[in-house]
Length: 557
Image (cartoon, rainbow, N blue to C red; front, side, top):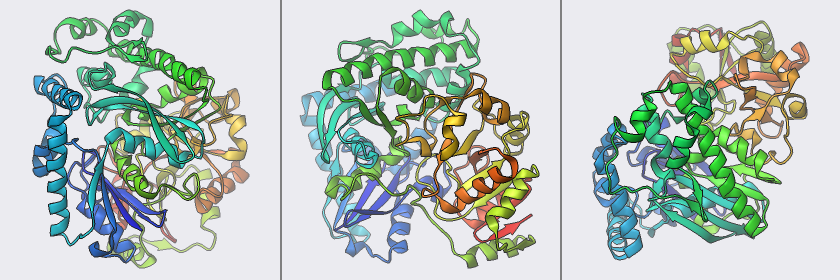
């Protein structure tokens, strides 16, 4: 059985499964170079088929995540959808009307049932024009999220919790995952206050909503949450089984009411109160459901769980025995859930999330030659790179398959020492970034307990860099370049079976320096997607003025 899973909303992408084995997955932004691309993922589909020697007629099923998100108009005119996503105003009354339409349509069933039928007809015609003759179906947005977290987690039974702005009229769901089955338990519609809670404040603070929420998370550590705690609690609070609702029939104005109050305070305090309230209220929500269902393991998916500080708070304050956040937690991971919906997985868990494009030796050599770079082919690449890093060189690494998801996990990464407290300033300047979050470390798994506090139960997800930990005094002392002002870090905890070539670099570096951690940041410039091709790697390497570049088996300096 050959199954193609698709997401055609923002962060569009595709995943390919053959006989229950995930062979590849990629998001369109990496191929069309438009960050968080909402265009239909034809490049992703074409790459997956070509990489596996398949043709459209070989595919047995196409499953598209989300039935009516995006709405039919945007499904037909994807270029308009792309423009709207990039310019959307979180305070526009059109957004309120969109929420009202999706929620009331779902509650009354008939409007969205008709639109779902029309969307499937559009999708079938679109695929038929490209040579696909198989059935084309859609599945619910949040069910796809739940599948993308619960099935790869290896946690059974577990609670599958999904939360995002809104998809198919819902913002929040709770399901019980057991024996490969997902049983819905609770859902909350898009009137849920969590819908626009973070995005509107992100825009209010001068950042781009649906893209820069991570900057607000980093900024929060610099403020005092107590100043605005009560005001944010009125905006979002746990109530009953879920959260309070927002009256989306009333327009929101960025200069009045609650937002006028925010303008009287510094943005650090606003960010701190926003984050603190979210953590407090979501802890209350998750505690209710873990207690009620008597399940202490959770699998999380949806854009909300890109919030690494929230994830830390849930792990520490909810009495969890295991936690898993799917590595591509936002809508970019929906294509994985869609692919898993047909056959699931023959065994719990996935062996790897290095699922994207890869390039052969000839392609790497050509990119280096075309750029006029001098390079060598070391016999001991891991040892040579470790020596460069120990000497204080910044090394970019492009090798193997690209990671699936927003985090660079070693194959499309920039590496550096962690003991330079000034690295956040000079490296961000070279990469043209303006981040409040510090750079993240990668740490040898066998030394994790020396570096981070309270690690038990985080093993299913700690290798994906989607969870914060409080740092030990030893970590703070030896790695100040990757420890945030609040004493936390967001590590990738690496075992050799996860990525042997990358592990060997870190192990050699540890042998030379005694430090089991390196700085690991994504290989891209500001507002660009993570690089995809050898040519992009060479360009970014030269533009950032880095010291060395690993390009497949070659090392350029």
